[in-house]
Amino acid sequence: MPAVKTKRMPRAVREQQMLDAAVQTFGRRGYMAASMDEIAELAGVSKPLVYLYLNSKEDLFSACIRREAKALVDAVRAGARPDLPADRQLWSGLTAFFTHTARNPDGWSVLHLQARTHGEVFAGEVAAMRAEIVAFVTQLILAAARDAHRDPDLPAAEVAGLAEALVGAAESLADWANATPGVTARQAAATLMNFAWAGLGDLMHGRRWVPPADDEGDQQGSTSPVR
Amino acid sequence: MPAVKTKRMPRAVREQQMLDAAVQTFGRRGYMAASMDEIAELAGVSKPLVYLYLNSKEDLFSACIRREAKALVDAVRAGARPDLPADRQLWSGLTAFFTHTARNPDGWSVLHLQARTHGEVFAGEVAAMRAEIVAFVTQLILAAARDAHRDPDLPAAEVAGLAEALVGAAESLADWANATPGVTARQAAATLMNFAWAGLGDLMHGRRWVPPADDEGDQQGSTSPVR
Image (cartoon, each protein chain N blue to C red):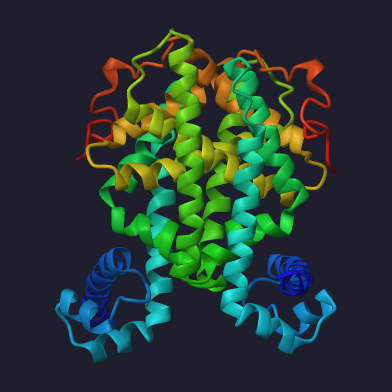
């Protein structure tokens, strides 16, 4: 048993190195242009070993999608702070999301661009992750609305719509932030707070939602500019 | 010359029939599963004629994307009402958008799902249309903010981010509305107004943005439920 264990450990580590190299290559070159030669070289292993471990380019890409989807969902869940008031919860969740997408631009590109551009199987894996995030956000909005006892009757259908709007806006802003030099994760999160929390109506009247000054280092540095 | 003209007219009409059949088939079956046999049969023409007119399945799909992209952009532009106050402008634009996507669910599926799932060339065509809509929305938000003289200094970068957020939210809600029985175009537009104009903050306090009662028939029936 110990012998098996020591044999397996290096494999797990090497697999992660291959996935790191694959995410970087798929994210930057695109799925079609990425070559297994390049991925193997970047991972510092032989191409046959990549095939031995991950089977095919398709399976390697699927493994990348699953790993990056889990990392993103974990980051968003970790950013949830149910103890905070609703606006601070949203701010915390959004900074966690944009910090993760800013720090992992290749992973975000794999999930939001590459996976959806290369066939229904890959797109389906990402759709499942997205549905999980929408369900999570729906619960957060519903809990916030009910806890506040201010609009306990917010219809479930409208909450579902609001969660879709929030997730769609966040996806679009993550693409934009990663493609726009100088836009930090904190700025992207603040833009979405202004949009989604304060609302364009307040914004037009010069009433902005202002990020709290006291949340620096609030959650492992996620609120400080990351680029 | 007149002879050429009468010869061309039926071709243009028949081409539109083929495109109608192709949009319906691609939108419902998906790009891969859609067959040229099925498209020709639905259009009431022979398969060789479809190839003669549109050349290949790829070219036919590209023609569908271009036609549906133009129709969507035209619908959104037609919904712009620069004479109205900013909130009514947004309401008018959103109802035009959701009315179009609700009335043309196959066209929306081609643009937002199929085109992005089947390779970089098709995805690129949709990205160009999306960039045009984002630029248009950016100008609307900028003009509204400046005209109001309330926040004339709203930074251009933040306006660009707000436009991305609004477009991303609208895309996500259009998918959701078309997939959710009983959600009308007007309801989807009202949800996005609550989200983007009133803001979640106001919504949590029970302050909703209420669609104006007097806009029925405001713009060719686009504000009435379409399903």
